[in-house]
Amino acid sequence: MEKLTAVGAAIGALEQIARSRELDDKGIFAWPLHRTRYRSSGSFPQKQLLGILKYPNVVAIPSARLLAAGRLLLGNPGQRERALLLAVLTAGGVGMNARHHYGNDGSDQMAQVTFTVSLLAKAFPNDSRAREACLRFVAFQACVSYASAGTVKLVSPMWRNGSAVTGIFRTQSYGDATIYELLKRYPALSVALAWTVILGELAFPLVLVAPRPVARGMLAMGTVFHLANGKFMGLNRFIWAFSGTYPAVAHVSRALPS
Image (cartoon, rainbow, N blue to C red):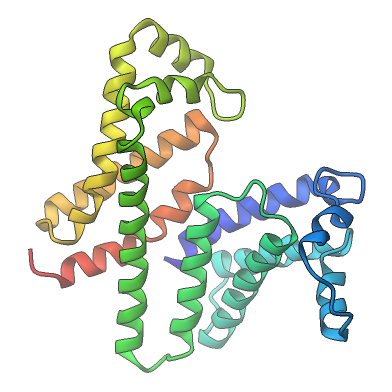
């Protein structure tokens, strides 16, 4: 669970480092502008914390997250070191969100949940009940995320008639010219895709009570869905953030009666 999520964190950190000039005082995420969200108390701790978010100091945050994710993925850290690495990933996520929240999406939020809960579990290394509670929390959070996304789409006329799908693939940010032309030529395909996504997201919580072969199939379909989003929409961190919750979902699914 932690390692899958760490892959997405490493990708996100690399992207932030590559675009770090956007964080300087002349960039679109200039700190003199974004710090106006915070009321200054003049206290020493606040000055120190806000100072970290200045450019170029702030680049140290994704750099630290990249190192922590790399160590988690490529090394074999013990429990204490793993807890420290998770603390860096968790605190770094909070820090970058405090720096600016533009561009953050559901994958960042889900990854933050996973890292935070995993860190909490490390605080009780010998308590199986705490570990179980953390796994259940991540699993239920994943189910809520899918179900809420499906509900929002269900109440949207643009999703129900398929035009939202066509509109998404028409955009420069999340679009794909080949898919857009295909959907424009066959409007029924847009409707079919839209309802496949809606029903799939709404049905996801059933994975917790489905028979094991069905649950495995649902998780496989979820993985394919996120892979397709990464390929055609450029959402390359969603696959790691959400599939990172699947071990917890599978565990809870096996623990519950079918």
